[in-house]
Each structure stands twice: as C-alpha cells, then as structure tokens.
Image 1: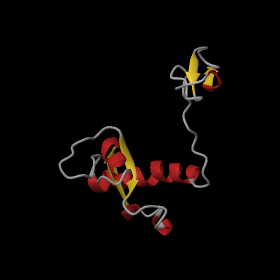
Image 2: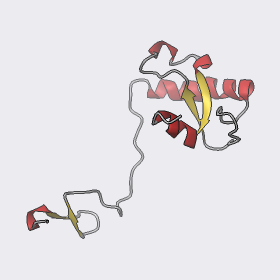
Image 3: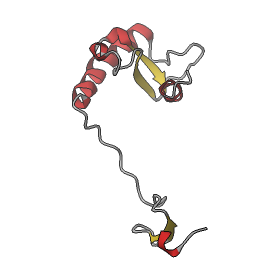
Length: 109
C-alpha cells in the first residue's frame, strides 16, 4: 500500500519513484580513495608490492586451482584492521582474482 506522499519525482530521469531509491539511469561516479593511507598504499602497491608478487609467485591468483591472470587485486593475508603493523609488509600480501577477493572479503573463502 503506497501513498502519494511516498512518491517522489526523480531528478535524473523524471519518472515517479518510491521511497527515494536510486535512479538506474544516473551515471555512477567512481568512489574516490580518500583515506589517509590511500595515496601511500597506491604508490607502495604499484612500485613495491606488484613487482615483488610477480617475481615471487607469478601474476596469478593465490587460490589453489585458480588460473586467473587478469583483474588481480593485491590482498592482505592478515587484515589491515586487525594487523595495522603489517599494512606495508610484502610477506602479508598475495594476488587474488576479483571473484576470490570478493569471497574472502565476504567471509566465504
């Protein structure tokens, strides 16, 4: 049961939408990395971590049996929140494909 009060005109496409949900037609912007460690991490990842991981393990996902070599993320084996002292330790890093990285983040891997 909806009421006219709940209906709102979309600013982007002009259609009526309910409960101010997002407009699927609005172009989404990339979320900027603005944390205090973001720039330092990006520089470390590109100049130190990736070359190290490529040399030591090759450019492949670390999950056994996975052969993905594209769209690899640099993952912290032990989380940054619980182990902040390992943030820039190359021995705490591994490559994970996007799928396995998402599964690990969601606690399913």
